[in-house]
Length: 117
Length: 116
Image (cartoon, rainbow over all chains, first blue to last red):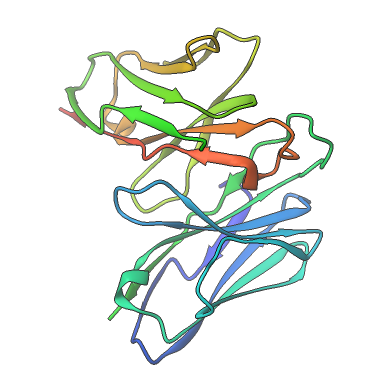
């Protein structure tokens, strides 16, 4: 248990469905992230939220829509996905000092295994 | 462009044997390097963190080394157990990135299988 909880653990959705992934962190961190992990590829950073403000969007298609209502919760809203979007979606949190000094490590949730059919 | 290369891509060894995983990086300026263990279908969990001044660090049966001059790191697993079967991911942090997870470069990982 890393203190970062993701739900659901598994999700199968059709290309016309709308679903949401949820992430909650109990570590008091100020930054939260969404990563995509596809088979045999490195983790890809999708979105960064720092103090609830989105600070980075790595050219992610608009069919992925993040929401961060507070510093403990992060959502990823999904709509009209494609089969190639099937992957493990990981949420992470960290305490970002923003000082340029070595930061604390990122703690990852267990991920949501998404299958788009 | 910052890159992290890991080898081998996959490895199968018998229970009780030792193994060494490699990580080469081009991230600059370098801040720190972490090894994560990721069990199938789960999120990565940190094993160890290496800073510029550290050459060797142990965590139980796991020993990580860092050569900042050659930009290489290794993870040595001693007396492997079935529970060591997992992907091992090398992650390098860039200095002045604020330390957040957006300043990280991930390797593709080494998939390790321990056979009884």
